[in-house]
Each structure stands twice: as C-alpha cells, then as structure tokens.
Length: 258
Image (cartoon, rainbow, N blue to C red):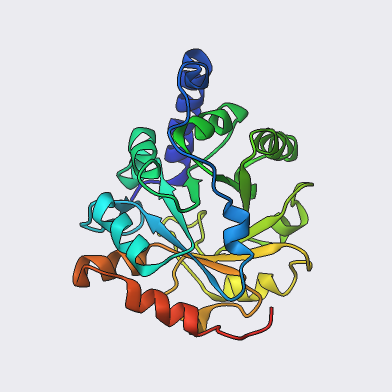
C-alpha cells in the first residue's frame, strides 16, 4: 500500500519538472469552459462521478476510463472528478484526453502543491481543481486559490478535521469533507466524519461529501453534492452502467430543503 508521503514526494518532483518545462506557455486548452460551481449549486443533490483505474487503498478497479466516462454521461451525472496521478493508474495526458471528450464540468483530482500545477490544469482542460488543506501551509493555500481565481477555475477545498475547517482560506466557496483518513496506513473511511463536520461548516459554502459512499443514507443532510468513485466504478464493471445507482442517490434527496 502506497503512503501519502511517497505520493507527495513524487508530486514535488513533478512540480520541479513543471517549473522547467512550463507547458502552459507552449500548449492551448482543447475544450471549452464549464462551471463546476454551478453544477453543484443546482436544486437537489448533485452527483460528482470519479474516474480512475485504481486506488492506493483498494488496488485496481479493473475498468478502463473511456467506457466509464460514457456510462457516467448516460447516467446524467452533474460533474466528473478525473484523477491525473500515476498512483491511481492515470496521468495528466490521459486526463486531458478524457476531459476533451466531455462537456460536463471536470474537476482535476490530484495532489496540488504549487501554482504551476494550477496553470497546468488550465491547459489540461480542468474546470476545477482540488486542494487539500492538511497538506498545505496557509500561505500556499491562499496562493493556490488566488492562482485558480485568476485562471477562472473553481476550487474544491478539502478538509478532514475540525482543525482543517478552521484553516479554510479566504475566497473559499466549495468545501469538501473527505471521510478517508489519509494519515492512516490503511486509508480507513468513516462516514461519521462528514456527518459530524458538516454541522460546523458555516452557511454560504457549497458542501461536498467525499469517499466511501455506498448508500445515500450515509450522507450528511447538509451536503449539496456527493463525490463517488469506488461504488460507481464497481457498478460499471459489474453491470456496464451506473444510471440506476445514480438515480438511487439523486431521488433520495428529491424535494429536500437545503
């Protein structure tokens, strides 16, 4: 099982490469712009479906990204989360190819540590990026959000604890609560994490519940959206579609006030 420290070490090497190569100066974006924030602000529960080949905690999902993307589009999900990290069987190049094939808003899910990765995300076709509070100092958090705002990218600011919640940077609009314990060697998930933390997230933020969801009953009532990877990927592998599971989550909250 790959540790977070190993992933972050590899990511620092990627940042150094980006600083030398500066791909955003040599390439242009291949797709239009689509609002991730608006997709999450719609009435009812918004569904963010994730694309990846594997996970450091569970191994391979035995799926290929292109048919998964097609299954998600057929199911009518609201947005996509696409991994771009090799530890999940993906790459920036594959992220770019997949993003170019859809008109859904796309979140680049990766371990972003520097503004150069935000600039790269623009040319790769991202509409939004993920930043993880626990891995970044306050000044870096602010710099990443400022860079994303200037690049017209939305930001999903991910927290894992009450301490992370206290450190939300200014300009935060979308807060993600990840049930997965990234400090645990086994990457354990606990749906109570999102339910408990959601009660303390101030009004005005869009709230995304992340990781470990198999059933809508586990969702915090406060959630505006849910990000689901493993459950959807396993469903696609088994049945070739995911529409029935998407509808199960969506209809569970139909008509509920937020």
